[in-house]
Image (cartoon, rainbow, N blue to C red; front, side):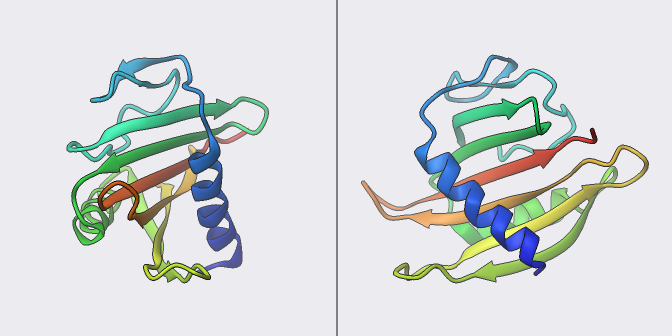
Length: 145
């Protein structure tokens, strides 16, 4: 995994865990929270999940989305590896990152949009063991500037 990808994945999970606000968007998720306006409609969102947080950093052109599901990490990872390897997306790298003090590793999938669009990002998948076990999916999607 590239150092940049690892830092993005770890930073993404920390940022999403601390975020408390929802963005204004156009497409409602299962939780009623909406994806930010301009979020690519062709980006795969895990169906059996609840959108917890979404935001857009207009200055940097980065979407951040946090999703929770009762499914295990392996199911979520298989979904994103499969869906992000279909046109127009391409998986560039998949790695597991150890987090000090945590028993489970975080899976980080780096991806790009094939073609001239220049979109790229990471999907970070972690296991959370508070109030029962679930997988948290953190998506960071960067748009060309």
